[in-house]
Image (cartoon, rainbow, N blue to C red; front, side, top):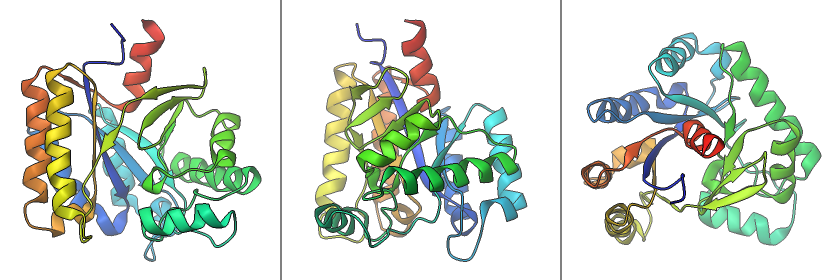
Length: 249
C-alpha cells in the first residue's frame, strides 16, 4: 500500500492579521474533531498588515505549532503581477482572482519573494518547510526556487510535490468557490468526491478559506466532508507529517 494513502490533510489558506477571526473559527472546528491544520501564512503586506508586525497572530501561530499544527508559507503579497507568459496570467486571473502571485514568475523573482517570506516567518519564530501558492498556481521557475531554497515540499491542486525526490504524489485538493457561478456545483463535488476517496482509503486533501464562512452552507458542507473522512478511518495529519510518513516507509 502507498504510505501516503489513508490520510486526511486539511489546510487553512490566507492566514493573516485581517483574516485572523475566520482562521480561528475554522481552527476551532478542527480542534473539536481532533484534526491538525496546515496553516498557510501570508508573510508580507496584505490589506495593510505584515505578519512580522502582527504580534498576536505570530504568538498564536507559534502556539498552534506547539499543539501539532504546521505553519507553511502561502506567499508574500497575495497579489498577482503583470509580467510573464500571457496564458499563465490569464489562467491566474480566472482561477485565483488576482491573488496568484507565483503563477507567472521567473525563478529569480520567485526566489526573492520566497526568501522574503522565509525571513518574515523566521522573524516570528517560525520555520516553514512547505509552500502552497495562492490558487495552487506556481510557474516552473517558482517550483525551481522552492527546490533551491530547500523547501521539503510544495503543493498544486492535483499533487503534493516532494522537492527532495522531485516526485509528484497525485492527490487532488478540494475546496469551495465562494461567490462564483460554480459555488453550488463546487460544494456538491467537494462532498461527493471526498467521500468517494475516503471510502476507498485514499488520502483526502481539503482546503478551507476565510471567504467560505461568508457564504451560507459552505462551512457545513466542508465539515461534513471532514467528518466523512474521519468516519471512514482516515488519519488526520499535516502536509509536513505526510511527507515524513513517506520518508520512513
